[in-house]
Image (tube, rainbow, N blue to C red; front, top):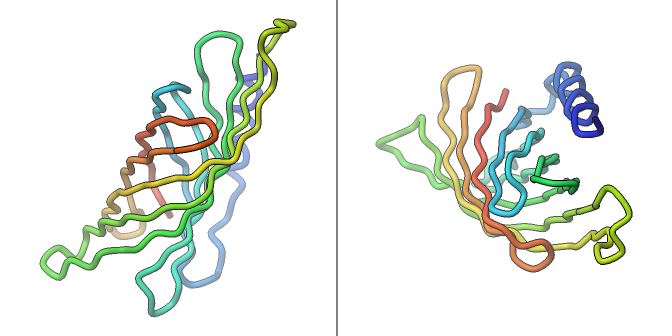
Length: 157
């Protein structure tokens, strides 16, 4: 039941978010698949530095692992966008950043405790400029903390 409520809350937040007036800001929903955490739903915001190839990415994802485990994570990454003159609508990127992952168990199993760990992200992906929307796909390794490999895709507005 808790997972359904969290999913509903994330979807309501996504429905109520307005595009910020700041130039270079994009936001959108994302779907992730992690090696340890299974399916995740989240929201992402990106801010480009004017006149620079650097972008800050902030995201929150709530995952739905098997069993009585709850998992969410917050990520803050800095990426470098590669310019490809022959393909102006495709922007590959690579970078890294910080991750905070929180895992908690339902029930009263004494062998398991709640765990919040900081980690490091190494990531790469590609954005596709499709006019008013920008689909993206990304691969991320989280090292340290709660380690896993994650594939993420979504749409930015």
